[in-house]
Amino acid sequence: MVEKLMDIATGKLLEKFGAGNHKPGSGSASAMQGMLSAQMLRTVIDLTNDEKHRKNYLVYIPKLQIIKNKIEPIYNELERLFQTDSEQFDKVINLREQRDKKVNPHEKRILSEEAREALKISTKTPLRIAELCLKLADFAMFIFDHGFKSARGDSGVALNSAVSAIASCLCIIELNLVSLPFDQETEKMREVKRSIKSKYNQLLSLTSEKLAILEKESNENRLYERSIRKFQSGNLAESIRSNSEIEEIVRQLQNTLWLQRDKIWKNQNVQNPMELLKPEIVLKKVMGYTFLLSNNLGIYEQEGVRFEIAGLIDKSQKTVQISRRYPLDTQNFTTAHELGHAILHRQTVLHRDKPIDGSLTLPRSTEEFQADKFAAYFLMPGKIVEETFFQLFEIEKFKINENSATAIGAKSILFLREKCQNLRGLGRLVASLELYAGKPFKSLSEIFGVSVETMAIRLEELNLLEF
Image (cartoon, rainbow, N blue to C red; front, top):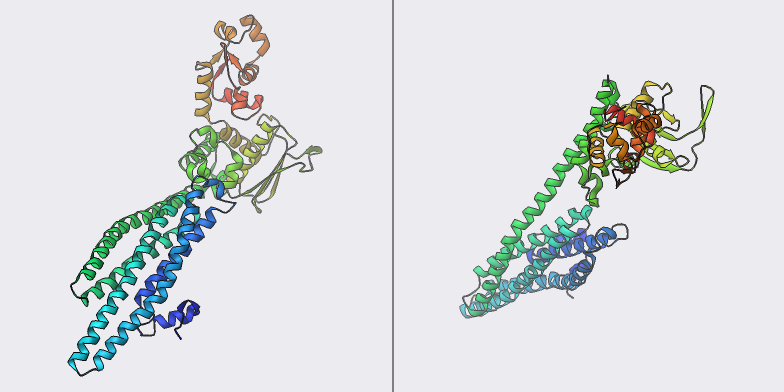
């Protein structure tokens, strides 16, 4: 009874390959490499089509499903050839052994011819295995490029297993051709072999390109990890001596976010720097924090004053919670404030923050003041605020004069001055304007997701107002 190789336990099968016998031999080993390639490709397709990942690959799912359907008959044929190669090459070896035992030259010649004919049949097996693995390699190329990105290691294994199987088959074929006679059938096999080798050489180059892609991504990830490490250290306040140094830290963070936007925002194709000003994303993606919105964070008492908590940060647990009970602009500023704590301050104690929007003038601890400044610089970067200001008003500085009074529809310069009363009042007006010189737009406070008061303060800091 012929032993079915696929029914043998893996360990025992590998022992057979290393037992110094001719079966199972190199052709069966090549078929096994092809089967491994097929199974790895099935795995990547299934991962791509998993409900957690499918939405990112919808355009490719139909083709991937077609490929999966084509892989099944290829795998089945490789499984058959895995067995066939062992049995057919065993016939060749048996004929050769019988030939070597014969003394009669005529009998030797007949057995030699029979062995060569059996070898022709045996050579067709690796030729067919190679052809099937060429198809698998083509599938692997597509799946590497368009399948689940996090499983490209599996796609790479599938690709290289297929290519390795082809190389193995070419070695077997070339060795067999040495023993085969010059005839039409052998020449046809040589022609098929040349075609396979040509495609194999192309695959070698393409396989190297795929490895280079993985290496490039690995290096980019190394640069990313290195660039964010300083922020993740969570103690940058120790070197701060001024507000300008806080602003420089924020600027460095924002530059890193821009340079690494594809890594952080992945498939969102971020083109506008304004899209980077999302403190909750930075907390989650860069700082590794769990970010939660809560309906109620409780009441906190400080120096005899009770207030409803707006935000919590627990650095030891890497958790930030923000209360929904405040306006969105307050939630946004509080989140940026907690991001400031995460980056600036070493303390692992739980911070309990009052409702803040950046406009608080009451005395604050050094840590709270620094976190406020961090939030203001993060949400309202000076350069972007100045560029946006100019786009809306087409002036370098907002002054109370005849032009500005007319542009906002004020009765007179005096009326406008009395309405504003001081520089801060002018800032509030400019921060909340939604129409200027007949041109409608979102207000500056809405654009930057902060309160009118906070925006007014930032306009003052940037010297964009003159009362």
